[in-house]
Amino acid sequence: MDYKAAGAPKMAKKAPRHVEHNARGTGKNPYGKTETKAELLARMKAAAETRKGK
Image (cartoon, rainbow, N blue to C red; front, side, top):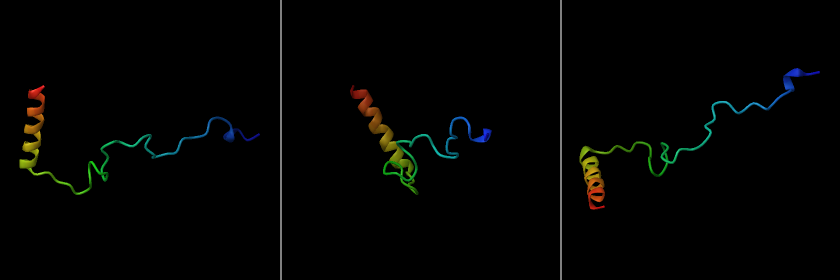
């Protein structure tokens, strides 16, 4: 009898279980995208204004 073949099948190695919604290389987070400090501050201020308005 071949005891090695008994049991549950092995999962694939080095494969992610799921895909992240903001993974590198996607539309939300493309490769090589760098945000300047001015863009970051503008985005943070806009987010603060929307939170303050609620």
